[in-house]
Length: 480
Image (cartoon, rainbow, N blue to C red):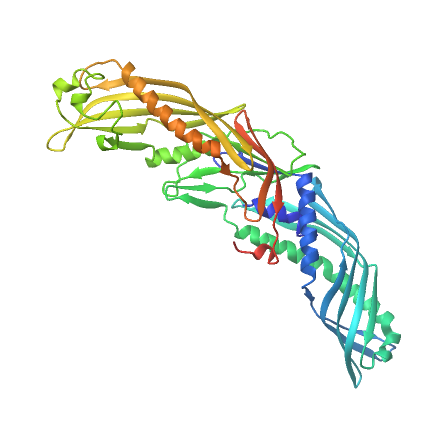
């Protein structure tokens, strides 16, 4: 039961300012699903559990005591009732309870009474166990999600013990003494075991990486930026959601802006991704020099209307064949500033400020600067989920090409702009074919998103989804 209310949290736990760039919301529907998944897992795991030995003594009269040990105890059957699980704002956590749990056990007994030593087998029924636990959620100094036991209450209704073998008939008259002692022993062990399980979950949460490498240029920080918030219907985790350079650790020149995720109780979980996350990635790549490329004539397709030779550039830059006849050219294409994403209702926009510097290659290999063109481009895309894949389409909202500087004198740019537009259109055609085929939704470590819906809102994009959870026999120690 106590695993079930933390299982879903473990699936996702994974600032420049305190505003989270990513929000993960677990709804009551998700909590109840996690409860059912955890209950099924516990029911399966109980079949393989061997319980610790129970030892003690029972006083029978003023001078005599029977010393006993119950060993090799295993669960034969477990009547696991439906637990309840609720968000618990009073403790910023989760409250779970189970009433009427019954367990059938078997094992071996050993006793000594004075000089009498004996052993045999036993059957035990633990009846009417009630347990209530409150788990408090928080955030540690490094941004890990933390869990701790805020309260635990357990009560055992009754214990029925039957001894077999040996001289068990001698001890049957003392069963009521055993029952009372064993009942109290079991009752006293329940909450410490619950707290041990919660501590195990806490250990695994602390061991999780809150940042990870994406590629040699970039890593991502998914630490909690704020403490978890809980109301009666949902749990909200705010993550930093920032891409950064592991070399420079420089903060981007912009901050995450607050956004409010809409209530979607029809789905198990919601994930909101702000513009900041994508723009922080763009800033890292821009700072790292990724957004640039050098182009020479060997990279131009043979049938393309423009080739990088000064003698062939006359229709576009008339003075070039006269000033630098018969020379090959190089182009340096780069971003003048960080490409920036913006989320608007129904659309994702990308603004690109680029430039193209042209050089003539002299016979001795030196490069002579010719001119610089500035390109300002705005792309608009629509994204959606279909057939379990993220699909989309991209189009051009705005495209302008202007002469920013020239060492060969002024010239018109309309013809070059038309060529550049065709290049962009060709690139978008290839991209749209790939987006039309779609990208498979990422699978979490122990869950698969299903029934997912993607919506672009003002300032953020929201994913609403259900999930199929896959818990294993090895529980949280499973390594994939």
